[in-house]
Image (cartoon, rainbow, N blue to C red; front, side):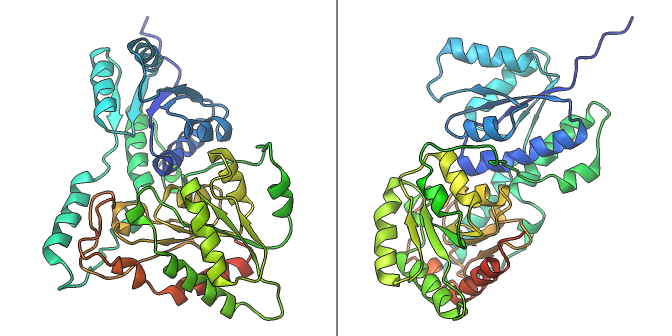
Length: 371
């Protein structure tokens, strides 16, 4: 008798960061479309692991903290060895070590190509080009989004079993479902049940990726000016970390908004932040993980790119979403956007067409935030 095949059980390694984990949910969407009965073991790290655990209850989650003991690591490896294949969507030093161990145990492993060398090439070109020449977008982000690169690895793994559905690959998207989630503090939830709400996320993973307050102020002032006089101004809800809370207060003081304002920055857990975003009609944000959470929840976004570029693969993908950036030749500053501006002026942000951002946000809010 031939060897009995194991059921379709797939392991996924994706521990960080918030945005990348959310983008990687497109892989779960693809697997679900291909085989709703397939088992998935997701190796991740809290708090982002809770997004997977709650949105995808049929996925078995395995916590791998950064300080995991050798015993905990062995337990993780034992769980992955039970899979027919493992897909490394993290591709860092630790995951590569895990991949070597798995291959030694005879487990087929497929790794995502995140185009790191391409991103490094863009950075090197920017340092040579400086501000003498304009940055010319290749529009490659339209076909090489990071979640699509992850899907390529999943597709390769699936096809190794003689299975595959190209249509599923093209329709799979990052997805989160917070419809059944609850929060311990429901006061802000009740307030957001009424009227239109625009989410504003002023933060980012690095200070260099945060748009100056003046840029956000210009956008909101222009949005207020453009708003129909026969309609009440939408509410604004600020989300983000504790470091964003005072910035939100100062922004509202300078903007004189006139509509409802909720400052939830620094008050919410990651799960509650997702719930808050789900109650908005759209999100104004920097190039950050919250933009990916919003789109995974079906909310359009307006994303401000400063030291990073859309070609890195993190541009918004929704039909009603848009990215805004300048044509300065010194972009991108670095591979992850954390290098300080070598000119010291953050002109990449201040030269963004803020009236265009305001017009886009107005359209989103008046159309009900539908993607």
